[in-house]
Length: 117
Image 1: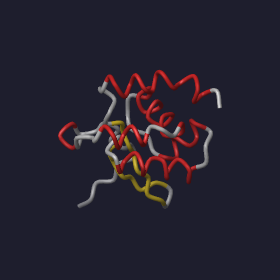
Image 2: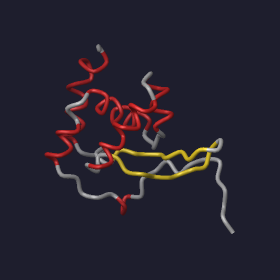
Image 3: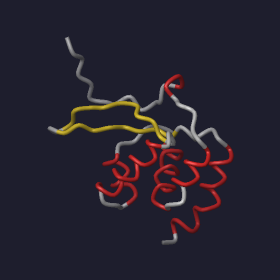
């Protein structure tokens, strides 16, 4: 029998994390919205859905979903859960580069520029 949850799993399984290719992630981090998404995931310390990210960042859901898909392609974020919510399916993503000092420095160094736009 299926178990229905109201709260999603917001932690990424450490064993599910795939090694990232630094060149691909750096290319993905060239866009300020993608940096803002990763920064938000780091600040929250847990997975967020594109809907939550769109609300928090004041962006269009379709735009956020597109950027999350690009981050997922390069393994900068990983899927933690999929929940049926209000007749739709909600996906939750967490950062896989959170503990990487180099990528965190990029996010810190670009924060002023990204938030000033």
